[in-house]
Length: 292
Image (cartoon, rainbow, N blue to C red):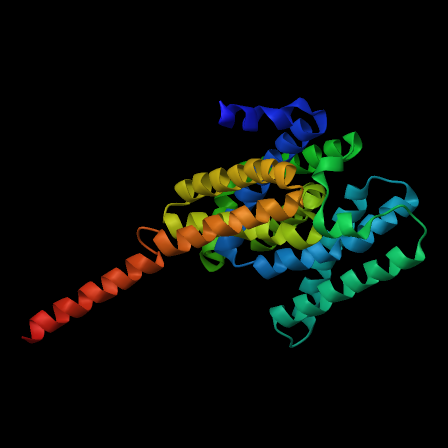
């Protein structure tokens, strides 16, 4: 009875029902893409794009156009800049990413302070799903659905590109197109998650679910299922916790995701720390028996 009351009370408020299902949807989208990002090793790229959308959001509000348009254009523009600089200089990718995303982010901070608007920088950085407007929900749904459709249609090609790009190129796959396809859906996913987790926390939603699935299973399809379950569960429970404790919703979601990752890191049957130590100890005992 107590649990039932705990479960039902937030559902009496429309903004909470809205926040729960929007968060769950964003968690689903982020979890699906997270598996590809984890295999590709693009966590830093996701961080770069999430910071690069700041000036796009400010410009969009200043021009009175949907923020998702500005965010996507600047996010994708940052990826093009990273690719161009990397191809035409001797700098390594991590250095280029660091230069580009800090430059875009700083430009956004300058615009926030100079362009008169009602933009709350805290909401941009950390999200505010409890106060999300109907227009923002529509933009989130459109960006998320496009991402899911593109991944569904190109899932095999994207998987091969992430797992072994050289083999993908050898069999005739257009890896350049796959590169920009993955970057495009990454930018769209960040746009979709902007209101839920904000720019700072969205990178965790893009990396942690896939990492949890990667630790718990070797098969991509099962990794995908684990990633989705852990992400959606954290989004729903995190929203509930933020209601009862009166804390940041995005922060609650990411803390739960991080706790699930720590549990997986320690107790994963094959790749967990305990399992590895147990195997190491067993191997040492076998070596000693052999020596005897």
